[in-house]
Image 1 (cartoon, rainbow, N blue to C red):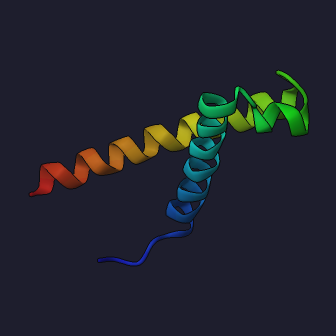
Image 2 (cartoon, rainbow, N blue to C red; image 1 turned 135 degrees about the vertical axis):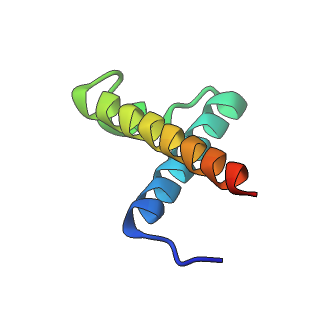
Image 3 (spheres, rainbow, N blue to C red; image 1 turned 180 degrees about the vertical axis):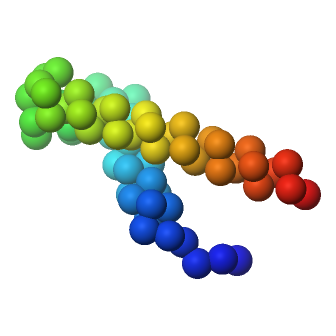
Length: 69
């Protein structure tokens, strides 16, 4: 397995944050990002956008990895 680049680490952290937030929403109807930064504040929207971009990056990375095999 190759070493992860700094971008890969950031993507992993963002996906963990997003996954935990969605888990809290699904289980307890509690949005941690909104609770910390305010509902649909600029910072909250920025975090949601970063998590979405991280998911797209991860999807493309996995897609490219699967195409190689």
